[in-house]
Length: 461
Image (cartoon, rainbow, N blue to C red; front, side, top):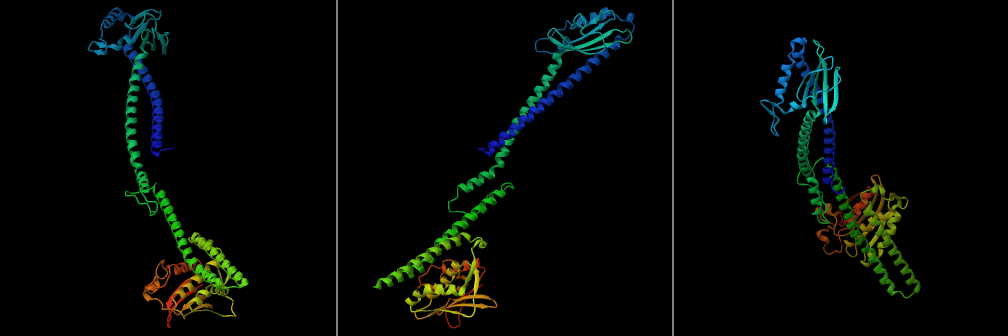
């Protein structure tokens, strides 16, 4: 189907023509039957009318006078194309009347009637071929003298009537179909206008413009589901593109710290002369590359699974062990700035959390990295893992300058950096990544300035 409009027009015209043909056949048959019955009734009426004059004793009828009068009627002529005049009608020669006695003698006949009986001399309707025409005949016996009265008419009288009715029906129906076709074409064009508007609205869009489609006119009920589905698709595409953008930004952010650590490790390796130390340092560097690759893969998974947190792979994670591993990776950065990085936890308590180990590691590493960046040289960063009545607490405390109170609600926004961070390298993505990972784990984040100075970031599971 190349065109809905063409399909509708062809389909509706085909239906109209089919309906017209069926209607015409039915009308033609009904008209033919009605005309037949009408003219049959006319034959009977003519016979009864003539019978009214002839229903008397034989000696009272002047057959010569009657036949002479009928002969004079035959002298009336008509010009070509003229059917009637005050003297008569052209159809007179298409109708016939005969009267026969019981011995087969013709007593009376109209000029158009032959000299032989048109039908058998018995009551009823008959049909006979005579001189190229079919005659419809009604035969009746007169009660008073038992003469046979025959009234007849040629078939072309009925055929002409049927032909005129059929032509009238055809003309009316064809004009109706023509007018209906024009109206239907206009209505279909008007009805498909919203589709053209939708097509124009989509074709004129830029490739990166995925806002919902809005038509200037009222949307028909049939088109509303299409527009809703289209807008839903645009929303999903926009979300998908946004997630890919987030992934690229997050990946760049997450790779920066491992790359910095890797750089420090390689710089230290350059100073080694012992092959064993060099081999050990290279293995650590390779391990760091593997971890970075795994982190990027998990970030890509995070970007794709973000709409549905139930699809996230979860295991039982030992938060203390996770904190120890993460702090171990961040120690080189802390040492490079003479900062103290410590972990506080209850050695007698095992603290487990159901979640994604890699993403939880990303969460903690971002918190530690943020704390180290905003803590001056000689300062300290403390990581706390503790089981409390409120839930499991994973917190990072630093001794930095803190954050203005009015900026704290905006710290989770992507690319947002408060005024005091102007001298610190960063992208403003760290805490937004932390928030996304916390949401996937149904955790809550609390941020506040510490009384003794610095910032506290607490994640409650």
